[in-house]
Amino acid sequence: MVRMGLPAKLLGDGEHELLHLRSHGKTMIGPTLWLLLISGLGGALFAVLPVDWRPWSGWTVALLAGLLAVPAWLLPVLRWRTTTYTLTTHRLITRAGIINKVGHDVPVNRITNVAYQRSLSDRIFGCGSLVFTTSAEAPVVLHDVPKVEQVGVEVSNLLFGARTR
Image 1 (cartoon, rainbow, N blue to C red):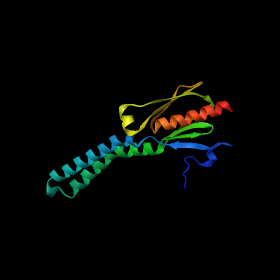
Image 2 (cartoon, helix red, strand yellow; image 1 turned 60 degrees about the vertical axis):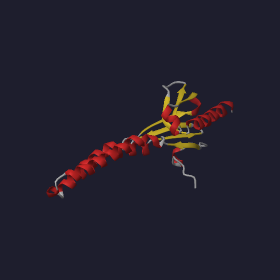
Image 3 (tube, rainbow, N blue to C red; image 1 turned 30 degrees about the vertical axis):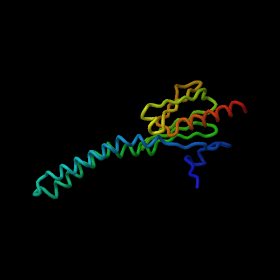
Image 4 (cartoon, rainbow, N blue to C red; image 1 turned 45 degrees about the vertical axis):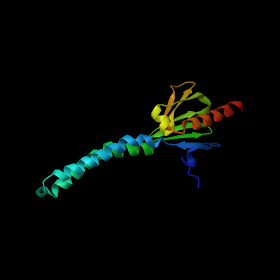
């Protein structure tokens, strides 16, 4: 079963989804390390607190760790899950936002150049940033795109095909 990224009602007449991506999972390494640090410190703090302070000390430590984990891990996870990049036969669509949604649609025929950038860590994880230069707007940059070279080739194929029709 193929899962489509966008509902069909958001696609125009004759428009088909080609790619639906989210940023690479490497973006979650930092927040996950923070979660592990918060959990470890919470466990260590619970272990050194006097036994006669229990159970309230345990609840306090757990509440404090939970409050620290929300901005350190939960918000980045939600941001990662709600940020998507979709390429259709007509548009490049970006969507982001947990509560307030932000979107940007760039018509494919306005894209004049596709480039990619890969740092050392990007090369290790197999991702990179795609940079789309458009005829009228500032460049659109998609960060941490998995298999960035393959995606760049696919976009270029779409652009050259669209220009030769």
